[in-house]
Every structure is written in C-alpha cells, then in structure tokens.
Image 1 (cartoon, rainbow, N blue to C red):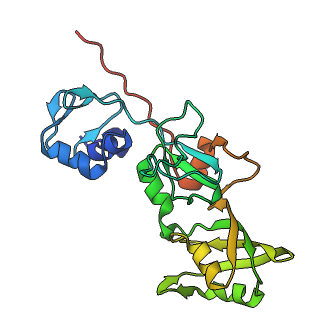
Image 2 (tube, helix red, strand yellow):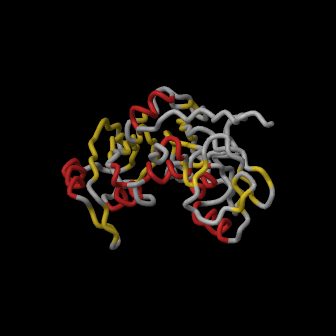
Image 3 (cartoon, rainbow, N blue to C red):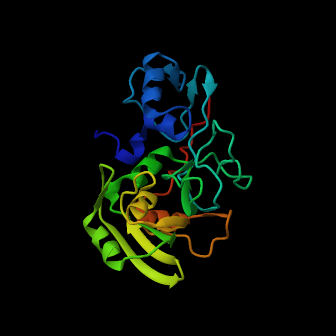
Length: 257
C-alpha cells in the first residue's frame, strides 16, 4: 500500500510546538533532543515526527493544547505606545492596550513610539516572519507630515535609493500631497522599511517628521479603523492573499474496548 497523503501525515512536531506557543522551533528541537516531548505517550526521538489532529502531545508531562488556527488582525496603533510585550523603561506597550479577549499575539514588524497607524498582529510567529520578508515585495505606505522646505525634485530622486550616514536605503516613492506654510503632507511608499528609515531620510533632506501614519502594509489597509481598535482579517482574505488553508478537522479516535 502507498504512504499517507500529505494531509494525513500532519505537521512536523517542532513547528507544531512553535505554533502552539511552547517555544521557538529551534528551542522545540532542543526539548525533543532532551527527551522532554511525548507524542501519544511515546518519547519523541526526532523533530521529523509528525503530529496529526487529535494526537496527544506533552512537554515535561504537561499536555499542550493544539495551536489555534492562524489568525491575523489589523490594529490602529496610537502614538505613544511601544511595539513590544515588555518595555524595560516602563513605557506603555501595544500589547498592554489591546482590547480583552484576544489570543496571544505578535506584531508583524514594528512602529516606533511616536509612529501610528496600521500594525498587523498575528497568533502565528512563523507567519509574522514570513510577512516581514522584503522578498514578499509588499509595499508599506505612509502619510507623513513634515516641517521644512520641500524640494519635489529631491523627493523624486529617492526612487533611486539614498545613502544616509553610511546606510544604504532602497528605492522610496515620495510625493507631495499638500502644503500649508512651512508644513506639508507627503505620501511615502517603500518595501523594506529599515529602523527609522523615513525619519532619517527626511532629515537628510532637511525635513523634520512631525507625524507618521502607516496606512497600508501590502494588501492590508488602515481604512477607517478607529484609533486603538482591532479588527480580524477574515479567513477568506487570508486564503486569497496568503494562501492559508482552513485548519484540518480533528481526527475521530476509535472507541476504546
């Protein structure tokens, strides 16, 4: 007889443990090597073992709840929050201010303390890393208020990239939307988004950023989401945009006896 179809085979146990929030995949592999993980009451000897729906997994004798289905949320981050679970300086964090009733979440990338707008949150660390990869080619779009004299030719030249204090930044699409006195609103789009990239590049052009709002991350838009609000991305959209399938149904176990 042939082997099991891929859907029947299940998911590699180290990845399953990581999605369940037990540990990173690397640390899960270490737990397995130390003989601390059991699958259906048998010690797991290799990370190549597979978990199927309905299997019992324990770590140090404690049962591990199966990972939830992958979920993605749009969050309108206000200014003044740090994108971290715990801040050593005691500043308020995004995760402290989320509405109650949400699963444990991680952010897809970050927005710094004074930045605001769209922040994607997910319960799947693997998905977060995948969505952060520049190889996705996803555009991150921002509305940026600046103070200073805007040179539209200098903005257009950013499409060729820029080097600021020895750091090379990739192409940036920047255009002037409106101007009022010494203030102006720009639309800025980029793919990679290095730490404080927009602020540093604008400072290089003699412009001070006084407000920075992310309005889109790839296909996901801030839209009219109120400040501080969270809205889940529908499963249908996850399938269409990310190719994520619906979770498998639990396997029925045969009755004992």
